[in-house]
Length: 123
Image (cartoon, rainbow, N blue to C red):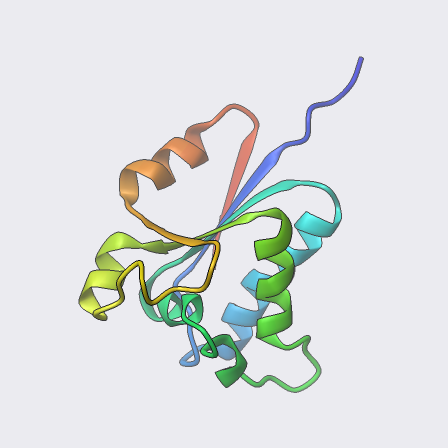
């Protein structure tokens, strides 16, 4: 009997205001992608800025993989979403975000987290 791969939904509210928490969320997301998990990364609150070109490279944290590299890993094999309300509060539009990043709201987040076999983590 084969085990289906579980999905991992990671939500972070941390941006450059909390660099360790932001980096930890993306490190876990990238590690899960590397392990073959289906990963959905949600950028909410101040982390919404990381969905824009060049913004992830603004976070510099000693002894940590650069955030932009981690984000690239997740974008290659997972999904990255900026929260609708968070984007609106910051004037972020679909035309502003990196290729592959979507803007979606709470209904999509709830659908992903309630899916069978899903595990959600919030940073």
